Image (cartoon, rainbow over all chains, first blue to last red):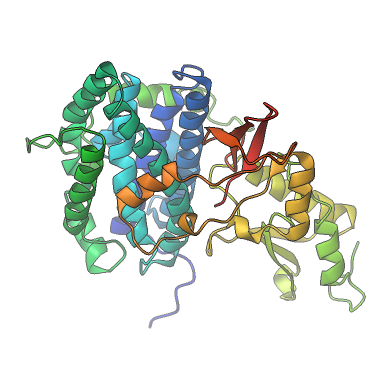
Length: 259
Length: 183
């Protein structure tokens, strides 16, 4: 006998899907927060930490949804602070270290441009919760994208040194862009249920658009190379461990602490 | 304590007036009603869960004021002896700065924050080309100085002291000021 479902039921694929979105936002937010007090100028310090704040806010919304779908019934906080590195499902791009400002901006631009196109489709998701969070996040991410795009143009079309540095970052981080669009069984299932778009279709749009911005910025799109993957399945790089350690440290030594 | 089921319980109209006294914690001259955060106020007449339900739509997902606003709403209602109240969050439709009331816009202006200037380009665009987004970054609105009304101002920082604001400076009087972003 079927009853109308009022509360989300545990759903492994949808849980994984929400968790990946949450982890992308949380990890990138944490990376950006590392710039706090160290920005190249005061305005940029505020910009990077404002973007971090938006992303951590979005992560919270995705974690809350993931929590409702979780067969283990973990809370949003437990998902953020009590999972180990290999249980994180973010793409490798977002965990890459800040390095210099050119790297940070390039990582942000690669992610913002993907995030923007993705959310633009998720606002029409068949999943009402996904739709609601995406509607809110889309407006914030459009603003982030404006910021990172403007910097790509300024650094690319700036001095010889700024051009050299951002071009280096564009080439070095390129190998992490393939994973953004590499569908696995979770993505295929989400596409089948029209919860999420077809990632390979998004990639075509993304490539075309990123290329046109690089042209404006006098930058070169890297040649196709071997793409690193594995983040969405929990295989992360060495630097991720340090990030998780710093992010979770306080919560883990005081697990019952309250604000 | 209020008798929730009685016909003499406070009217929704009165409650909206009380909520209008709850100020935004970051911009304490404007109320959460004038900011357009409070979307709905209703009585839940269900016997098991009777009480007041206030529905809010947050401005920005990471804004630290979100939690404070919820607490402040509940405190304000308690002052008026409504202690059976819940604050529900509604994400869709997403909050837009177009929901700020005329009164709210005036209060922002008087406080020295320029209220949002609607631009066709900042609303959801039909064409989603990234290059369009990029060009819009150069196409920032003309924001008049709240002190001297000069239109000769420039953006110093796209991000300000709170998620909802950007920082500008006036080229004529030299004064920096906040602009409430069109969102």
